[in-house]
Amino acid sequence: MSSTPPLPPPPSSPPSPRSTRPRRFPIAGVLRPGKPSDIWFKPACSVVVATAIPNLTLLALGRLDLVMYTMAGSFCALYAHNLPYAARARALAGVVAGMSASVAVALVTASLTSSAVALVAVGAVLAAAQKALCDAARIGPPGHLILTFISSATLFAPQSLGQVPGHLALTLAGGALAWLVGMAPAVVRPHGPERRATARALNAVAAYAESAQAASADRRDSGPADRGDSGPADHQDRAPAVERARAAAAGAVHAAWQSLLATGARTTGARTAEARRALARLVIRAEEALAAPATADPAALRAWAAGLRGTGAVPRPGGVRPGERDELLGVAAEVAGPKVPPWRRLAPGSPLLPIALRTAVGCALAGYGSLALGVGRPYWALVTAAALYQANVTLTWNRGVQRVVGNLVGVLAFAAIAPFAHLGHAELVVSCLALAFGAEALISRNYWLGTVCVTPMALLVTEFARFQQPGELILDRVVDTLLGAVLGVAAAVLVTNRRAVDQIEQAVDAVDRARERAEAGLAGAGAVEPARRALTAALVDLRAAADAAAGEWWLGALPEERVIAAERAGHRTLAATVRRRSDENGQGTRPRAEAADAWEGARA
Image 1 (cartoon, one colour):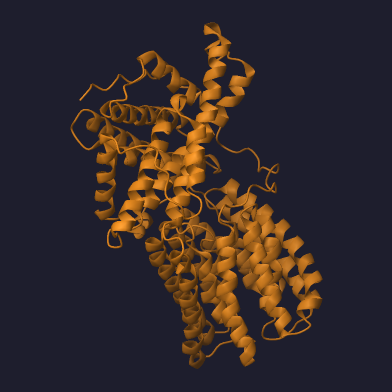
Image 2 (cartoon, rainbow, N blue to C red; image 1 turned 120 degrees about the vertical axis):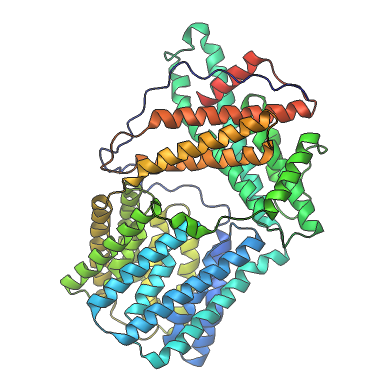
């Protein structure tokens, strides 16, 4: 085996830390639409199908008053569309179980007491538990919000103990249908989620390579005298964009590996194993380009990503090289290895616990504030507060602005839709289905756009039992929205998350440990492939922890110098592991000066 080329030297001195404590809440860009999700149509179509079947059945039976219970299960079809089907089956089953448990608690509570004070308290505790469990399981959008919306509405629906089993059975039936709808595409495209995750990684690394190459070109064009901090303005302007592109590419590569590893050993047949190996080869190429962007070919990466569309054969960028064979064996071993249970992420000291506490406090404040004002539906204020809570205060503020704007526009949409929906029950069902599709079509562009459809749909759901006066519904909704948003953001500011700094320190330590294992592998004292993936995951977690802490208030100085130093050292080690693999494959390595220049250009 050839010796590994020496690593480029670290920078002579760490850069000055950027100010990370927010001085004011941002306004610009909060409402700006972005690109839609590449799979927005999947949850949109799934929720329409999963909702239409029970709704039309109940319409035919003349029992639309039961729609709320079937819809609780049907909305589970919104989840887990990014997961491979083996993992999706487990995740959807967990969502259905969580929804059923939430509805059961709400139904029993509603049947035992009519005290609004007690109901708000139970709703706040449920919302906090749902938030913590969904974050720990990393279930993804729409997270806890659907669970909280359904359980809170159920809490305030009149109920008797004798009705609970029948209503809960309807929820389970709707959930079973949602599970079938979510799994149905596996018949046509069994490896679709893994192919999409791999394509995202290839495209993200291609974008990073282009940014890094442009930054390197700027550095070369500036001349030796300008290679310090006094570089040209266009080069200085590129630096943050390159950093963001690298973080996005590292996250996409990590997500692609996680998707391949999530297929599960028990479900791995010959065809599944071969498909996973073919996709793993492409992720390896993406990983190589991430570590050595100066020599990457963005056009080839994008061409491979385009070849993953549809159901055709997976592109093959060449024969399996010796290093890749070891890598593929490492993937197979990891698939068969033990998995960390999600509840471990809720251990004492977890950064998820302060967010759960914020949810409980904010929901309780919003619910009791609504009761104090005499609004007839305090669960709307409670759900508004629950919808706000993100990883930090700044993101929570952003979501609050989006929620208020979306709801205010949404009540205007309801005023326009209500005359048609009130023509009859069939029109009411059709309106809800159209709004459910529109919500999923828009919400990935910006949250407020999605709530423009969610708001009238939520208002129409209250009319399945009986038609109501639109003016009364609109007034209640506006008051509860404003109250829930104000009190929810206030709770986020007041309930501090001082563990955010501790989380950064722990993440830095995790990167250091992962880097040491990878370097030990380079020295021949361990396996390089799993260590490299562990280092990539640690770097992704470190960046997420740093970004989350940067948006918190009431924190002292953040250890940003340590974060930057750990990230740079980690990425240098990742580059070394890829160069070692290239060396094993007989491809040779670049001279040390060229490698150092590529690294400096990539991180600049």
